[in-house]
Amino acid sequence: MSLIVQKYGGTSVANAERIKNVAQRVKRSRDQGHQIVVVVSAMSGVTDNLIRLAREVHGSPDDREMDVLLATGEQTTIALTAMALHAMGTKAVSLTGAQAGIVTDGVHTRAKIANITPRKVHELLDGGHVVIVAGFQGVNESGAITTLGRGGSDLTAIALAAALKADLCEIYTDVDGVYTADPRIVKNACKLDEISYDEMLELASLGAKVMQSRSVEFAKKFKVTFSVRSSMNDNPGTIVKEETRKMEDVVVRGVSVDKNQSKVTIVQVPDRPGVAARIFKAIADAHVNVDMIVQNVSELGLTDMTFTLNKDDLPRARKVIEPLVKEIGAKGFTCTEGIAKLSVVGIGMRSHSGVAAGMFEALAAEKINIQMISTSEIKISVVIDAAGADRAMNVVHGKFGLGK
Ligand code: ASP
Ligand code: MG
View 1 (cartoon, helix red, strand yellow):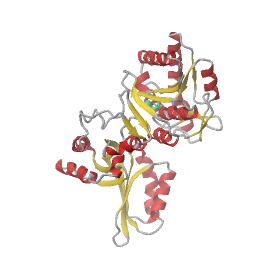
View 2 (tube, protein in one colour):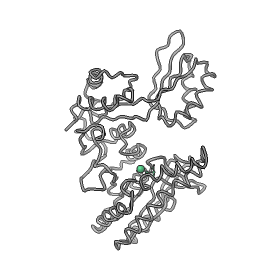
View 3 (cartoon, protein in one colour):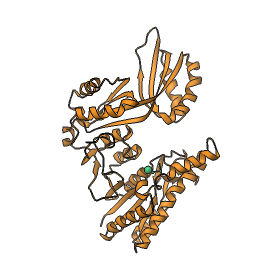
View 4 (spheres, protein in one colour):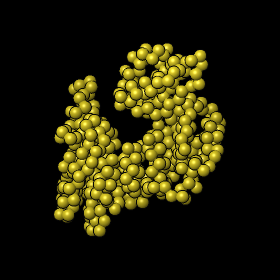
């Protein structure tokens, strides 16, 4: 008998029919004698709708109330999934995040899990129930409902798998697994049988929206091996796990694109110690995540500082940068929307050379201009015009022979 955590995303529970399909799959695993914990997202579109509704009543709704509102999406699906299982004669009980013992910090709408005490989950499993837990939510120390940030149900599943020491964690979604590139953009992209945490992390944070990246970080930290697979078929999916020697033989594992980026340049920043610290501390204090940072070689004691960030964070960043520019004595700042970040990822880059050259050649051949470049041990990213992003992705994918 194994303990299995199964997570079903929004499209997998999008309507009554799909919820019954999920229940059928859960029942099948249960009937094989396993203990099953199910984590579900809100039905697809529901969270977006709730956010829209909130904005109709208030321009910038209170974060605490936002969490109370958003948590209802997942609360709907846990109850419906439990009912669907009851209809099939399977014992099942639904639990909210708080009831499942998921305690978070107090940062509303993007809380971090502090600890999980799954006493109730264990009790119910021991009583022969399938336990259905609401994804994406928890409770803070003072008892208020919190949510874990968009896509946070993945995190709930991984964290529960770690806390319960589950034998298996399966992330069910609407794709067959992790691909060498988004198959909607690159028609001949291939499904990967396995991928390391680091590669998955880079791909997830780079916009391959398979999974929320915080959940992959969590899995890496607590060594939770998991699979990403489809809830619509029985294909094996992609296993995400610690890297093995053999994985390094593949130089480029995948190509990804993030079209949700914006670029900010602070112009003519005085080049003296403490200025970068001042800028990025202020931005961090506004809870804005900065991605690529480039500082130019300075000329006459002045330098340009450019960074990228999620485009949704741009209004918040703008608010901090405006007064900051005056304070540090810079000339001004510019914001650019409509950019994309294209990246190639692979742990094999640690031991193979020539990847950057290959990528730049492929882009040059298509006359695609590179605006920024950044590299890490296992990744090369370039910022390009969003309009050419899909074409760029296809040529780079082809260049590294990743297609079928
Ligand atoms: N319902 C939440 C969202 O849409 C959480 C999730 O689906 O994982 O972000
Ligand atoms: Mg989702």
